[in-house]
Image (cartoon, rainbow, N blue to C red):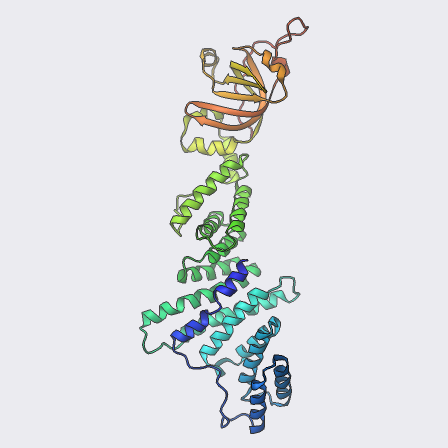
Length: 439
């Protein structure tokens, strides 16, 4: 979808540039008095140009070229007719072949005509490129060279008499962005990400609101070694904010990259960070220097540096925010607490308190944990003020009043009282220390 948009969206780019520049017709028929061909060769050329059937026209041109010397003055015009005819027939490999033949003629062709040819070449190449072609690397290299050549020609393009230097520079910006984008596409496919980023930055300097350019910048940043994650995330978010083609696909790609980068246990937290990123990127093309999304290494460090994640979460602030990213969605093998309340409807839910000292736990009358048990109806026999141990998945928390939410929990069977009249014994009334967050 993005490739198609690029081709159709810039198809008239160079034509409009030539009109603005007041360029004369670049491929007028050669005059008979020009040196380098005979009258009969000129007549044969005219007959070929006048042929309406493109296949027959190609045959006439083939016949003529077979008879011409390699330095014939007619060759620039013949190559251009080949180029136009194959483009008409959508024979893209031949379009590229004759675009390169015209490139090889250098200064024998007017700058405007060379730019027009290179413009079409860039569009055709990107639309028809096949990465599985055994000669793909060679084709990409030539395409990048052609785009860079066009950028050099833009600097030499004659300024129209009725335009100031500033006006002419502004008129050339879309063309510069187009050719830089073409060079960037080739560099991306060649896995030369540094060169791709340089070309994309130059393109964005000319057209700062191009969603496609930001998308490609994001891809290049994330593929660097080492990856430039924050730059890549910002560029992708900027592309989404500009609502370019394929927005839904870019959004899904960014989300997947964030999940891989952070590997948090709660995807909803990644979604919240992505929404924040999109909001910020919509307001500015430049990422604030202080803005950062924690990586998987940052989250592991946060786990390692906490001795009691409940205490640290209750403290609030940036540290608590980072720690929550680190522990949300994790399964803890043994957590302890004093029972404040037991409810049993569809399933048993325990309200517990976890503290740092026996005195604090003994004095507690309000829960700081809600534990939803799974597949343990017998746990309804647990009594208020009983100490219990459980395993479970940390699913959420309310900061004020503070309450942790646990899902898919299981109480240690030893802590569940036996049915009345049935043999068995209750677990001893012990209160193990709070479990440290897993490393």
